[in-house]
Length: 142
Image 1 (tube, rainbow, N blue to C red):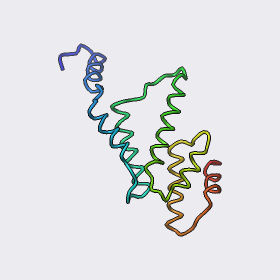
Image 2 (cartoon, helix red, strand yellow):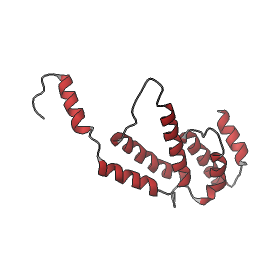
Image 3 (tube, rainbow, N blue to C red):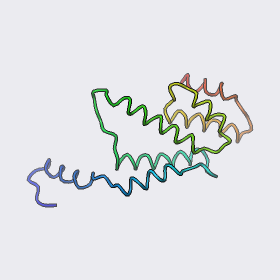
């Protein structure tokens, strides 16, 4: 690593060394995200797998930061894409809920969508069904 003269130079050298984008790993992560489906997993496990992949991807390919507010459209689009990615990977038993969520404008944050779907999964396991419109109303009020 050489012999840095001060802490700042050392930090910059470490940052340059370890923050290099890793194209092959980014490719692997994006491929895994594109092919991830719920299959036999619970909604929580499926969402957890997505979250791990999103978090690792953000380390290799971080979203730029900006305090000027110009990235808001980009960040909103990223959040929308995360919601869509989560919903598209769910089993068909969630198709009605997925379709109703996709009609919302704006789409809720991905953690809210996970909460709605998780609530529906629990209701199915308990054998109770609150109509989705009522369930969504309860979730969006909070």
